[in-house]
Image 1 (cartoon, helix red, strand yellow):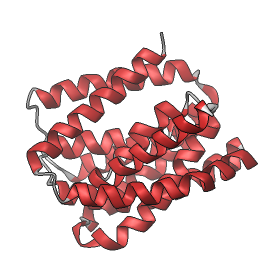
Image 2: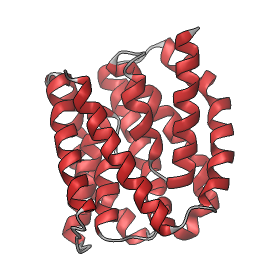
Image 3: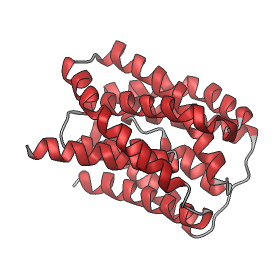
Length: 238
């Protein structure tokens, strides 16, 4: 019963964040799902539900998508995808999560200290590659995109629309790679079906919240989520 309650809270809260910010599901869900499932199950469950959320939302916000940046993200992610799955299969998960946590924390602190980036074509490709590697290795494509967009002062509408459009590609391909190479199980797909009603409720609530969040609050929420993710992954290793 405790597991069911924890699962429900994780999926509901993560869905609300995804709908209201465009990036919250994998950042919030993956670390906590690892408390309930093995890494393969947690990552694939995250990929399935995140794909559903992106598909449902994209039709409503497609006007906010920056097509040019999204295409560069996709092209950049292609070499990152096989690198990520190789890391997942061969590198000790503790070492991987420790490295990711430190990286996210350092970059988040830089953003809070008003460090800013200039958006360039080359950086778009690099960020896409990092996101691809993060997705197939730990199921979290969001941190590289979020750090990049925050550093370039991207509007919340453009951030949400472009990341969700990119997620349609990255989640689908990553899920196929995970299933083919790492295998899957019936439990993963049954748990995904159980999570769908919670996802629907979360999407409705998240859409309502998005309309009430101004740019300043959006940026603060971004920093909080990033810092929380990095800190939580770090604490998990000790």
